[in-house]
Image (tube, rainbow, N blue to C red; front, side):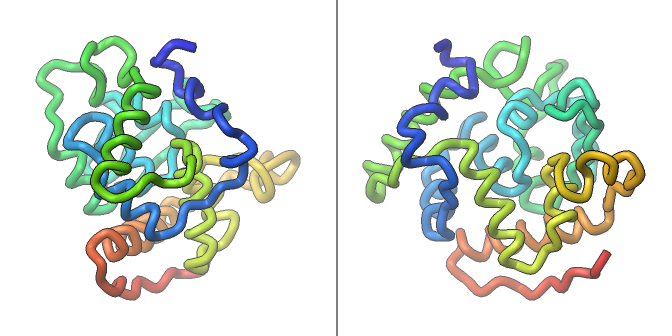
Length: 216
């Protein structure tokens, strides 16, 4: 498969990666191993937001606002517009990039966003193996699963996690989704702030500050 295909490296060793949830130590290793590059920023944003790889890799400047990312329906898997609140860590990462007339935030060629996923992932794995030690096989999609799992462990309610990930099932699936149009924007922001603080605490090797969640 071409390097630009996000799935080009996610189907390898499926028996090892299906259902894989990364530990805090593994998240820290991946974060620390990220190069100062488009791909490094993308990986960190995926860790902080739990969004899909193609949504962040193909991020457009007209989707980036001061406090949030606004993904139009044509750019989401379920064809529903999606708001991703940005905490301070995510905003700090994006602040390192400048439009300069570009349409997309990432990518060497301003046509469809970041490509070369397979090569970039192998390079990151090599960096990690050289500086620390090899990680057990992991995929970029494991980050999304990890974010969802860790949020649940932090006490976030399932329907808020679904709202953060723009995942239509459970509370939003079937008939329930037709009548439940709540977007939970406030709860999503609180959740992503909570998660961002947890990630930074892990990366920096300190205790996380307590950020209580308000029940929806």
